[in-house]
Image 1 (spheres, helix red, strand yellow):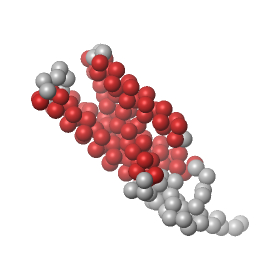
Image 2: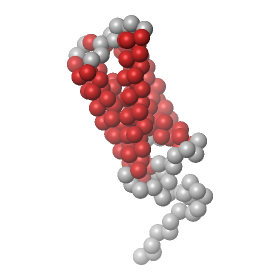
Image 3: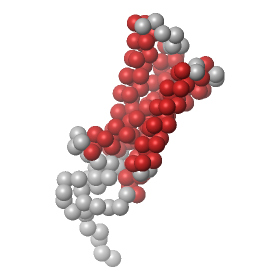
Image 4: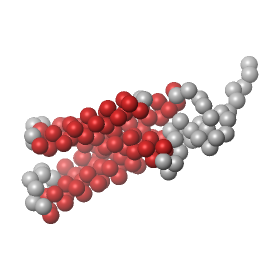
Length: 150
């Protein structure tokens, strides 16, 4: 999952979510809302992970010094935050600005669970991509670990 592909996925997911709201596609079927609330936080979380790593606030997913489970864990946590902020936005739109957004307890729980699940999948994909990236120097500038000779 190279950076340009992730950028394309992020733009497509955000555009899909926005137009779904404009045209009320969320009301078409029960699973549609869950799909949007799964894919969008996952794409945002993976992008945030890479962006925060670029800014030096998180270790890069390609850093060989990271434990294998760190990338999915960090990406899932970022996605859970995105899903929570999305639901806060829906609450604000509904209760403060009187928008016509279909929300309720079951919808909120399902959407948050979908956001966490989608972010976990994105984190696993990001970890897979990072493991396949060519081994280079660690992000701290130290050389890559030496391979044992056979």
